[in-house]
Length: 55
Image (cartoon, rainbow, N blue to C red; front, side, top):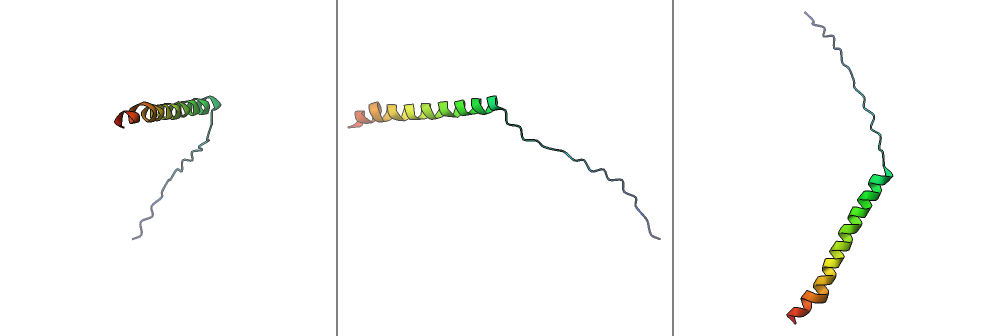
C-alpha cells in the first residue's frame, strides 16, 4: 500500500537591500578618526614625558 504525501511547501523569499546612509558613514568615520587621534595623543604623551623619566 503506497501512501502519497501531498506537501504544501511555501517558500518565503526575502530581499536584502544594502543601504548606505551618508550621515551614518560620516559619523562612523568621525568616531574612528577620534579613536586614532586619542591613541596617537596618548602615545605622544608616553614618549615625550613618561619615557624620559626612566633615564
